[in-house]
Image (cartoon, rainbow, N blue to C red):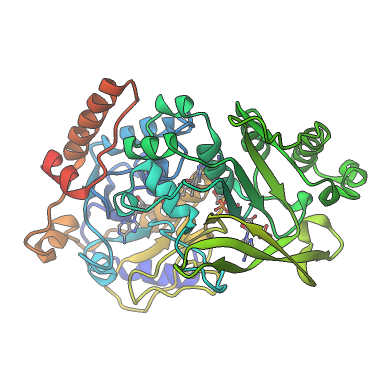
Length: 471
Ligand code: FAD
Ligand code: NAP
């Protein structure tokens, strides 16, 4: 516990034995794991989970790819947490719109911010707003049925597309675009996405990285899946791998295995076969940074101009790229920007770092010295930045929840706080709150609709429909 937090905790003292009330903002991975830790370690704690959408699970529902159902099994754990008698779920309540941070800190003993990263980073280059330049984040939201992305225009009438960035999100996007459609039919991908993908004319997909094969951000499992796709050949550029094989023995194990897999695939030496109309091609290229999007008179994308880079620095993992004089153009009718997510400052009281996270010390957020306001904490991508898989986010959430437990236990009795009963009084009168029972109705409906199509579920994609079913 930080000294500053200790002082605030001491000020929460009173003579009564009141129930500790914790508010968690964001019912995603970090929010649920924090609630799990709190209920396991504080016998009488009351945890309220506030969520902007009517439905829970954050990126597990709206990020994780539809063809990765095993990853979504964490939802079973989260459901048990939500069904704990001391946990309450309040969906369709948005921090920064329906409720302010000050209100939450007035009515709870601790507030944990776990509202993730809901925007994407931009490249800041010319014509980024052109038609058919889309954020991977929106495309992921679109195929996963995120209400705000359901109407995204996804134009798959072009034969060539490019993904900018080489992380696991980029590989998810590539796999969804290149997978045989019948493989996707049995997943929970939205029906409209299936229809659009079924009519796709896409044949060649570039995956463009600003650094080299030794710096890719994607991981071996995801690359292996991509390499195994039916009717899709991977074509690497041999020149990008100059000197790479010699470095392999010096690499750490995960990077070594990943690089060996890339080299193995490179040596298969696939080529484009113009005569085979059913074949698709996945074409990673390295040492290229987008410097502008090329457009025609209708502002329709025609290509991406790339700076050719060289790497500077000694250790491969720390090498940075610098542009040379050379440029290259990739002609394409569609481009996906996949260079990372970004958190939003939803309340003016929050201090953000230049990296786009809430300023914090291992999860504790520095706050003003008001005596009657709750301590503030941050967990998940909002505190760590938009990196890490569910397991990392879980570890971080457990760590921060442990701090909250320690802080609450070290306070000798707490002043009485009203929790959500008080928050509710201040909410707009037309605010329709979805409780866990409401989510279970939505869940049941989605699973039933999915059964009719042989899918695990058919998601509801509009908030209005969700509310109609839940309430
Ligand atoms: P989130 O899960 O996004 O939760 C944040 C929650 O806060 C959301 O429910 C959001 O609606 C809510 N919220 C936002 N704003 C507000 C507000 N103002 N008020 C109230 N609530 C709000 N990891 C894996 O291990 N395996 C995978 O296959 C995998 N696939 C991924 C695919 C994609 C496309 C992405 C982006 C990530 C993937 N990850 C995967 C990583 C994993 O999703 C993250 O590590 C994890 O979900 C981050 O958790 P979080 O709680 O910080 O954010
Ligand atoms: P990421 O892993 O950070 O990858 C971002 C990519 O964008 C990197 O290749 C990065 O290159 C590149 N990039 C960043 N800024 C750029 C710029 N200005 N110009 C050009 N390229 C730029 O982010 P992500 O793919 O969004 O994934 C986020 C997290 O979710 C990761 O931890 C990921 O593992 C996880 N995730 C996991 C899965 C899974 O397990 N299946 C699926 C999806 C996501 P540099 O390396 O040069 O910066």
